[in-house]
Length: 202
Image (cartoon, rainbow, N blue to C red; front, side, top):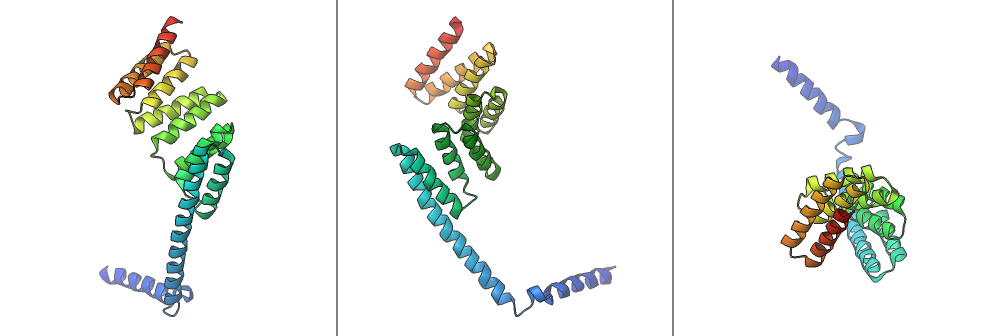
């Protein structure tokens, strides 16, 4: 039995070593190709980071269309740059392109599903499109990743209110208020308290 295993192993190794595609003569070329590819990928990533930061700066200064242009260039250089999809989605939302924003947030999630903020922002876009149940699903996921995320509690509370879930809405808003207070974010805390009072009066 051991001899049989050894024969199979030898046969496999022989096939790999003497395959025309991976011959001893080709090994240096393959290694060189891998090194060049790795260096190119690193260079592209560095350049993509530059465009990404330029996009952030343009967004901050109010040049939203310019920010989109910079993000597009970053993604041409590095198509799997999750943060760029996230920020481009945010900028698209600000420009009123809700479907584009959702597409970008979804692409970001497909690359890295651990950003609670992306789920929160995709939920906001879904809410604005009228997909309230889809928004709730995204808020749930955001809070699964980060239970102490006050914005997600607040936003889910608002969406629950629009769905007619009064008690669920109040519960979420109270949690948001407590978290804002713990984080010493007094303006946000007061805003949520006022929101609770308005809902309770209805």
